[in-house]
Length: 204
Image (cartoon, rainbow, N blue to C red; front, side, top):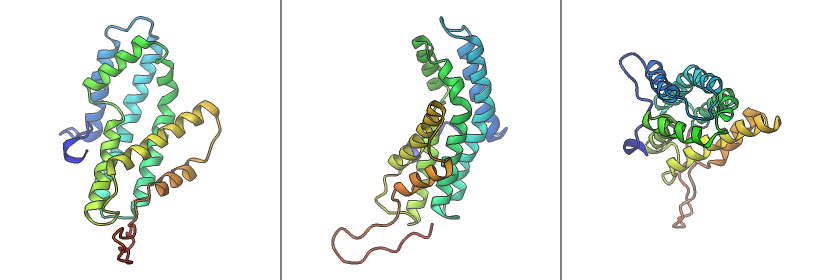
């Protein structure tokens, strides 16, 4: 991760939101021309319209994490990222599920999204890069696995949005995200060498 796993959400001269929207438009052109056998063109069109509208907002929240390194509290910054993740997937999941009934469509989406750099890996990268920055400042424990923590947070929030859509019930979003952020255990831990002294707790 970090410098070796660059996010697909790279800013452009026309602005970060425009760059992400351009990625979606390119994917849309590839998906809709020609439409895969067995797909529902209206469902695909709805999903792509939602993605074009919602993804730039979500991407901007994730990208803005980088500017929060060393500022505010780490837990609060991650809380905002978790909330944004749940909100994004809640808005697009129903449309996405409706186009995944066809195995041909799944393969098509996978190929197109990979070729255009779309997918959850960009969100993982942004959160992991943020955590690496905070780790470098000593605001979280030095042994935190930033990649694993990012995947746990984003994955859990995606699953929460899916289960709420599927079952119509579950924890409130705020309580869930707070629990997940707390469960990452980013704070400093006692010295395993047994010195008896623990590093100071992070300020964020």
